[in-house]
Length: 475
Image (cartoon, rainbow, N blue to C red; front, side, top):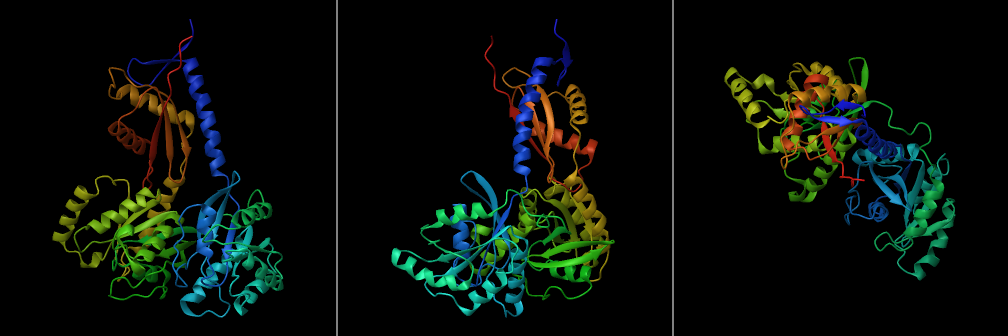
């Protein structure tokens, strides 16, 4: 008689052949996860304003991701997207227009482009072939000729053969052969992509990884106090503060030392509407805020504690949790909250935030500085949960006990059995259950709640997915 192992669910047994099969299936899945987790090399798309960098990024991606407008200066931040060409994956980094003598906001934009040039594994400088090499193009070329990374020259807006002949003049930039392309129509982009793949290393060069200060996004509806909080944490005026809602349009990055560590805080524009309902500068501000959230590791969601929770507050929280980022909820303007408002706020939290009992909560006042230092331990706890990994053996032992005590609901008269469980990833913690049948959403929420009770995960979303094993034909 074959040995048997006690399985998930009261009175359910799993024999060793089923267990081995589940482990085999997990092994294949783990290989997929490991491959996806590999660090990807980065190609930065740079150039002066309005030469078609974002259009070229969209053409490389094969989809519309980067914001494109006929006015210069729409792109202001470094934003990375994952691309795939000829079966090879890499990151494409869109940048704002680079100008050597920029002032004010454009100086910050140029600085972001310079960082991209210093950290990328390959650089594509884009020039408007119709205009030819300008003084700004020549300044960009002088900077890039000193670059350690390979540089490719893309002569954009070449829509026909006659335009190709005119690109020969761009050899004068000293960046090698110009690749004539039309980002708008796709002409010549295949040849450029082939050249990019030849220039890119298999793995990122040293010093270009994601190591560095942990990244924190300050998000919330307009006029909730994000910029005031950043200024209070930094001890100086890093962001413009005004009583008029919507003062901040672009994400503002600041390195701030707190608790003996350096953190990178990003002040974002207030989210007033859904991205697809916004228009004009609000649309672009919403996109940049969304990008800042996705680039962050933890989001501090500011809520005006002196006012009732609004649909905007809930929408921001939903956006952050869907992005999979660690979460700290900061109830700001606590100096304006009296006893009656505190009682009312607790009721609103119990009613509206019932799905987020795991989020870290801190009551602060950015204006007076009350309790702002308490944000640091909350951030550290949330990040620790976000990075946490549970050993497979311990996870399966815990799951066996939980499902033996509380089996899942029957489906079609049969009891689903979980053959094997593993943590497939972190940031956020992601768990995969290999099962003989579908597990109801309510039961998955029950498992998540018990998982948090056993292992913590305060401040981090947890994702649980179920892989139903296909029935095998009987021999």
